[in-house]
Image 1 (cartoon, rainbow, N blue to C red):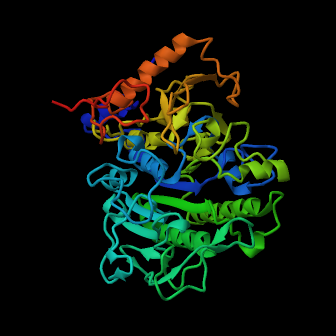
Image 2: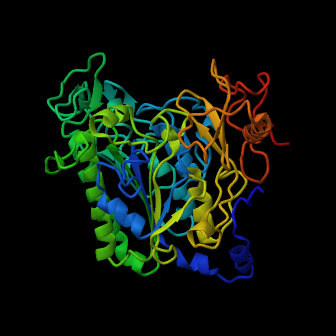
Length: 512
């Protein structure tokens, strides 16, 4: 049975009657912490055999609900962040493969609802601290910037009241500590990647920098040092929360989006964490990441906000390629029992840690095997607010508020679409996962209950399941949505990665 898009009939009826629902009256503070390239098996609460002990992530899990079947909407940075913030799969946009650089037209178009704009429009203060990676419009051209002019098409244009952070992953340049629309110190010098002594084969972004632009160099601010990212981000996040704590205690809630740059390359743990894990520099960097999460949790506690704050912790995709080396060197499985890692269509690429803590509503220490996707946050937050999403927002977002509160234990969820960095698709429904035909790749079918490691392709034994799932994913692509509602057009017509769909036809009929 396909579940309803959002289970909000009860609060909506009361709202229409002029009475606030109990859910809407709660209006929790919301914090979304997003790690970068962290695998399902890195946190010790997810992997008892982990060589990395993560006491603060474990603290979150012990105080809330840990999901074991949660997925990002893509297997690399940019598209996953789009899905998280908009509740819509990024392959519906112009971005069909890979990621953006630092500078280009923003992937979230003006007017598209985001987590931030939804919450802002319902009385929340909204802040973002960390890595954006969804495109920015910088003043002037490389080598001829006018940094006295504001940056456009950036977080402040997508629902956030406050922004401090970096434009993209550190290997893409235009690196500076941006606050609002301006760099605190403009990126007026240049650099290339430098060897990383802490993690051989890796890189660093640190002084000395060059004064003259040359081919292959990236723009950087004179004061930028890669190893300061996590500390600066957490410091700013803590300051922002403290600044809004008095209003939050009086019923004016806040929303903070905190996308870290770790444990993505460069792997650069602070001195105090080096050599402290049983998993090399990567493990040490995860220890630092966990420590900063703990600093944030301590702030919420000291400000008296723990009970009324909903925290979501997850990762943007599976672990980067060195996950293979960590198995042989440290017997550490960053992807847990799942196949592959970042960029892959298999579960190691998109099954991620996903923890929700909200003491006022979520029972501590619970575990859910409900299938969820990061796109589901928009509909879930709408349920908490007691509002219904319009048809042109959150087209791939299915609310799970009832799961959090223990009212729905069925595990039902409409199909989730997986998407790899190379453009390949898969559809997951119940126990079954169908990997679609792509280029020279033939379709594959896996029973994830019997075969979570996706080792045995059973498509020849179950052709009827493959046919049914093919029809389902085709309808989801062509209808412009995977939730009930009016047909919405995708941003483009057919493209070659839709190898199973006949001909170069429109992938979403235009609305009449």
